[in-house]
Amino acid sequence: MTIDEAFHRVVRGHRLLIAICLVLPMAAMFYLGGKQPVLYQAVGRVEIGTTLASSQLQADALSNRVLGIVTSPGVVQRALFDGGLNVDPVQFAIDHISINRVGVSPVIDVTVTQESPVRAALIAKSLTNQLLNFANAGGRDATTGRIEVLSATILTLTNQRDSLIPKLATASPGGVYSLQAQINAIQTTMADDLRQRSDLIIAAASMESTVLLDAVGTPTVPLPSGTKQTAALAGLLGLIGGLGLAALLEALRPTLRNPKAISFAMGAPMIGHVHSRDLESPHHSAAMNPIADRMALLGLRYGSSRAMLLAVRKADQARAGQMAQALAVSREDETSHRLQCAALNGQWREPGEHPAIVIFSPAKVRARELRPVHELLESVDWPLLGVVTYDRPCWLI
Image (cartoon, rainbow, N blue to C red; front, top):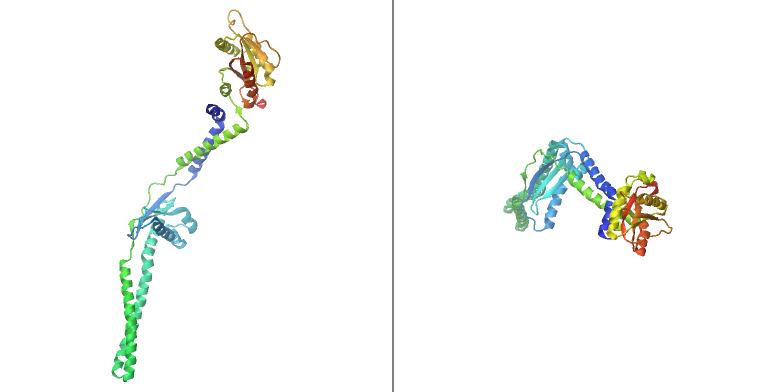
């Protein structure tokens, strides 16, 4: 099968099926897109410190940390309370909250989508504020608590040392040595605690802060629905599926579905088409005259004077005989140029000199039914003038 023949049989022969597979998914996407609510997106931009990530892995870790904060059920629950919305915080976080990192920078957008622009802004603002508070206070609280503990310890040791120093004046020589040893131990511990507190104070002073770059505003323009893009993709998938289904049907049950496909498969011109009403009385049908004239013109090409009608189906051989009689009617004044006609209906027919064949076929025929026709044409080596098609009731196809 050539590419042209495959195109005729698959695409043209199943164009209705392909059109349905193309249109139905697109219509469904447009319908479903029209049912979707209009969504608004509120965005707050923050900067988590000022140090750029040294790798994609480090940048992803920072993003995951922010995502874990803003999607925590407690954080989301407080944001929903601020926005006046009473829904499941876990499901809301999955469906409506997202973050977007700008490259590998520490700049991150906190995004909330909602049907109400005001509610989206309130929830996004609450999430952003909670993120700022936790990021700035989460690490500092532990440092501040450790500094306070060390300060209290240093104060206690200082009081202990100050209480031992006056006792040196009244202590015995042995007691003096004991007091000096206690004072030295306290002093050593105080020095270590003072060093730790100093390091923590310096670390707290140099600790990076999370800052708000863009405050959350109330969105005024809804998000694009993307219905057209989705419908186009659905149409493309439907077209591919329709072509695949048409090719499968053609492979399982190859059928030529119109006169043009039959003409193309036979490699012969289309002479004419006869309707069912013309077949009931072919002798009085006006459709026979142009068919007979075209046959005569085509016969001049091959120098043929006799046309043999070859029915594709055996059940139509009698009808082919009626057609041959109707096409052979001639009057000396008008139709003497027409070819003599006979039907090859399984009986001997005198071919005469320079005979030619005309295929007599239903407008819809199985591809395998044309194989005997091809074999006969190859065996007799007569020229093929063209194809005449006719309508048949659908229950006979």
